[in-house]
Length: 449
Image (cartoon, helix red, strand yellow):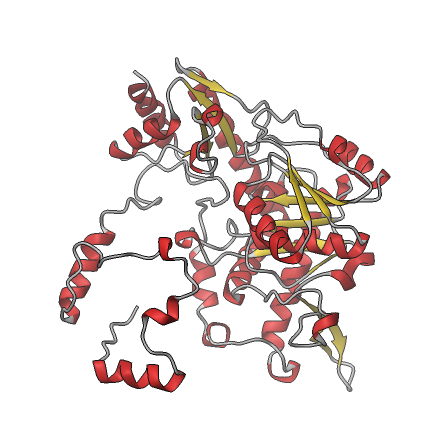
């Protein structure tokens, strides 16, 4: 970020131009409880550019980066190897500076990669059609529920207890402002919930994650049939998109809408974002789909080309006809996904998934041999839940002090639920070495003494 200081006169001029009395008034929509009441400790009120750089660099150095130590963090955001070619290609000027492709005659490159992106997403999810991406997995999930409401003309959604809490919360926030009901099953570490029993004649959809938040891999075929029998849709969320290289695609198990977080392919952890939301559905529902879709056509001379085919946002059509005002995510993230998938190819994508699963199995075997550690997940892809004999948050803090990012305590995403306090989510990817696993096993053994 550039250091661009302002004078008091600059500030007064800008505030006068937009018609507000103070900088504080710009933040009036942020609850007072969420605002800092005093300056941040360690930051001087005024400093030169070099002093600011040194201070911020020293503060940033206190963080432990996932790539600098053995890391087993997951819970919806995963560290994978991204080939250097991806970053090199997305930084070409014609990609890096491109904007929304409204004019096909000058944006063929952007439209073509979005078309390729949609094709890749449709293939890996087993669906007929995909859009040009949404913000992230959580917003894709909420949009899928609203789409199911439109399709079924019902207004009650059932969410699995194995759905990522962030996806659940974003959906609930949308429900609050769009006036539909959300029924959430209790947290489901064992994968034994009966979602079909929660469906009634007002239910528009059931949302289930596969692999689940706690790691379980499910065959959703029977659930899809039960949901369809009651006139509702099945929405499948995928938080770890690499799993689709190995598991049966949700479309082949009867899903009507598939949403996913695409961060694992082409994108780094990025401090939590920007990420890339995937969204795919059946042909018959395509006109209810949010976002936009790039299509293939021919020009007046019969040459192959691409155009924005469906854009059901209110900036394109009348507000009352719009399905959503959600925008496509940062296009560069979708481009990175597309390039990485192209480099992998179908065979490479499958090999990457197999490698991830093999690493996780090896790690689970190592941890299962430790006293005080019980593997909860009876099936998993590259992430599983373990039960510790102590609160997981305290154990993770001890591991962090030893230079090991040992996983995500479930209590971090289910605060206050004592029944889940001793559960720890542990993820392994192709980036984890045997030495990393040795370090975690050794550190965990120490922390549990």
